[in-house]
Structures are given as C-alpha cells and as structure tokens.
Image (tube, rainbow, N blue to C red):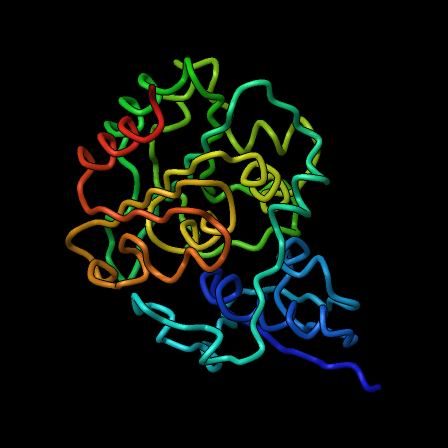
Length: 273
C-alpha cells in the first residue's frame, strides 16, 4: 500500500488540535505515514514513519486551518472523521528521565506581542506568578515553561516568538522548588520542545495562558486552568472557556477565566487541602 503523505506548515494550536490527531488516526489504522512539516516537530509527530523537516520562518500557510476549532462545542470527529489524539502523556512519561517525589504543577506562560499588538496582553503576570509560587511551592514541585526567544539548538519549533524583557527568571530564583524549562534543557541536554513535553508528562495539574500553551496542556493531567486576557482578539473564543471541547485531548477538566484573582482562587480551592 502506498504511504499516506501530509504537508503541514502551521501554528502550534493547529498542529496539536487538528493535524497531529489526523495523522495519528491513519497510523493506528495500519497505514504508513510520511509528514513534511516544520523543524522541531519530532515530539508532535514521534509516531510517524518518516518526518521531513524544514525551517519555519515565514511559511505559516494557514491554508488547511479549520477555524471552527475555536468554537466551544467544536466536534473534531464530526468535522475530520479521521481524528484520534496521540497518546502524548503515555509516550513521554515513559521517555522522561525526571523523577519527582511530589505531585507536579506545570505553569505554562508566554510573554510576546500577538495579533499585531505591540504590548503583550495574554500572559500570566509577575504578580500572579509570585502569589501562585508562594501558595503552592511547599506542597508541589512546580515546573515553569516559557520560551523567551533563546533556544538551545536549531531543532526548536516556536510559535509567537518574543524576546521582550520579563523578569520571571529573577522571580524564580526566590523559590527553590520551582524549576524552569531551561533548567531541564541544560541538565538533560535536550531541545525546548522535548523538555516541555517531558515536563507536561509529569503534570498532575496545569495553569496556562490561552493559546498553543493551553492546547498542549489539554493533553495532560487532571485540571488545566487557563487565563485569557479580557481585552484581546481571543477573549471570546469558546475554546478557552470552561468545559470546552479541548477535554477530548485527554485532560479531565478544562477551566477558563479572564481574571487573575479568580484563577488563583480556583487553583487554591481545587489543589490545596
């Protein structure tokens, strides 16, 4: 039988919610699959027979995007027919070399302009992070993920890249039980995306900002709590709201809010005894 060949050049949200599940469906049906896509996607398409990668600069096409994924009640099975989320948690928890004695919370953040705005809006603020770390660092091991424009190698696949100054790394120094994605990259000599897949595979719970971060988070753990800024282009997208279709990716509960204080209160209520 002739291999099935796919060509994907797009953003993380579509890679994770649309393309990877479509390819995985064909793989588990016994087909040989070849994917031509962007460099640094080894983790997303770990299961394919052949992965051909190229540089992503300036080639996000958007031609195959199904915009309906942003809807609250989107049904991927009805839309795509051939769709099955890859078992990222199962696969990367076996591959991950990190061992923790405490339950893990993953904090997935970003700080970069989006939608032609010059000032970042959709991110977990320093004030929120400090309060969160103070409340949870004794009971949990916390891993903090944010791409800051600096990759360890040339294999990274990054979306919405930014290098604006954000003093989160200085904040992390105050909390010994908080480990960054860059700490993991350096200790195990792995790429950014491999490090974040490892980290997410350990997650009991996750707090994230809306976007590709949240889609990846939805594959892992129990609770995924997501912040979306009340005044940005993505504010009213149903995908980021509580109990949206993203639970189909694997998490047990997906909860969205547009308020930092409410986000912190919900985390406390659900994750602290």
